Length: 537
Image (tube, rainbow, N blue to C red):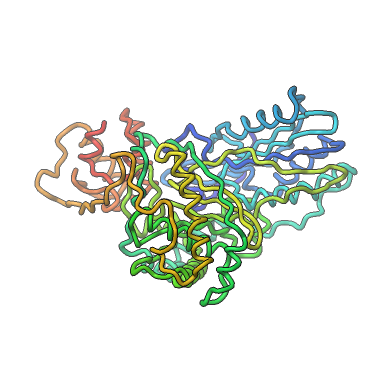
């Protein structure tokens, strides 16, 4: 293990991923990976030298995450020399790809690291597969593009024996961004943006998606998915007739998707999560790191508006979200205190993403033809995700649903419904939403476990009978008081209403574990009282 150089605050996004890893430590859900198919004469030592320089430049790739007292911190380690040995793989390209995918699914230990691993597989003398796998806590999709650009710049120089100091020195490191983010929040610089979200999301109701089956006790992030390729002509037509100024293909897709969600759930209040690159300063653009943020955009479909009217609202809400995008999603959750339920993402249960920062199809470097290939299958971070990529109006991708909640038939219907709404709107942009074709309209859930409207439980403070009456309740009362900084806590107090947050909830779990009591992490992260929690132990 290399020397630890610095101990610095984790970003809010890193804190969230650390928490999620405590909930489900045995899943590769937050691995990011890409394979590079290399055709031509490869110099493995030159590739290793290029990777060594990349790791020297980006401290975050030498970082691990630890819990220090009450805070999650980044520990930056000293640079190491990367060594690559080409491993022969029998069975051709398919066998190499299967081996790389096994590497991509292997678990990371956030505290021990390293959080980046690479492996070079030789298929033939002039054909290799280079697998790069990194934990999402230190890199996002944009970062993979940064890695590839730097590698393809540095490798030719290393192969020619030239110096590798050709790239501009980075002005800042990811830890600087994390410290700047925390400072801005602590000093109130994000107060106006936070007020915007408070107004936008006041009293919003979670989507009650008509699931096909009741979920098990633990979330299963397996997926069912269906291809989605909305015709570019439909999107182009709707953009051309939009009356509220320029709209993007993404906005057209969001309007169609929100229409399907409203018709399917019977709810006119729809919140969809949108990814935001989070690199709001130019000096952040060349950095590897976890910058992406989630923006919960709320749309009002009440009164059966026409599609053009909804498209205008979508444009307004998206632009407003982008102007107020620097508030970390994690802090929105802690500030707004939405109702929490185990296994469900707060504020937004579904996401729509159009990825325009992904890797190029192919490139050349020092006689090598480099072709990126995906290594990971679709994964369910939300109950439903619509994931697309492309340029201009030509978008392709898939709808991805949690397999423990939905059948394949539902994925197929959802994909067809988005296309059907677009087709109907392109033919008649002024049509009311209720008049647009949608195969999922009014579809009844196939399982009796479909979600019912959430009940709001007001916390009871100091009520009669609120004193602990069992050994476990006494233990939990002491832990809560210790971690929440309160003199006393009643067994009927609700954890988050009493000042709790996700990090404090995980600290309760870890402190209880130290004392020999194993608490269900999913239950602790949902809304609960001491009495409710003690009953599960």
